[in-house]
Length: 266
Image 1 (cartoon, rainbow, N blue to C red):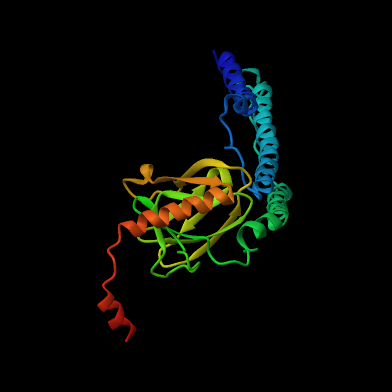
Image 2 (image 1 turned 30 degrees about the vertical axis):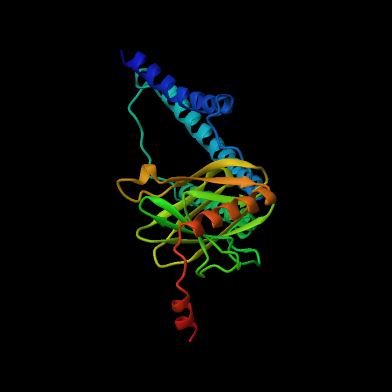
């Protein structure tokens, strides 16, 4: 029975790397993988992801194979004498501390250019749109016809973000209440929205279409339904959409009293 138990546990540990690698190999065929990338910087982010996946995958497979070999070779049923013990090896401890530290240092240096593109090299432009996270929706504010954000003619929307294709987009991200996370999976954007802070987020979409906006930070009971959509379209379609929204918003606003306008001017 002990021999059968040893074989069972050995094969179980062997099945872990085999099934794990097989799962990753077949996942793309079943469309269970990263969402389609439609951003300028997505290629470098995905490349970094695949590099780390390959590096950690090799360590994972190697560790599981080593565990399988030790379970198989040192099965208690085959032991010819009592087990022996060692108190440890200072040299071995130094080695397995230095190797992970060196690996992490290499990754930190390797990803610096990608990090700078996404988080540091902000485009020199005014905000395209302000996104305000609120339980449980995304409130959007576009500059009005004067092109300046924060003036009376600003356009207000909810959960319906539109951006032009092949152009830099600068988002001014805020939170109205708690911590949220502005996540655009197809654009490879994920940024926490922190109460009391204005955080710039930028990207350039390379393909037209409609994609998801979700919150990637547990923000309350309605977190699951905090969804929106981002529509990437041509500059012409974007301008037409803006004009239609401006007109729709203006039609719902009461006309200003001329006497009030004179009083304000004085």
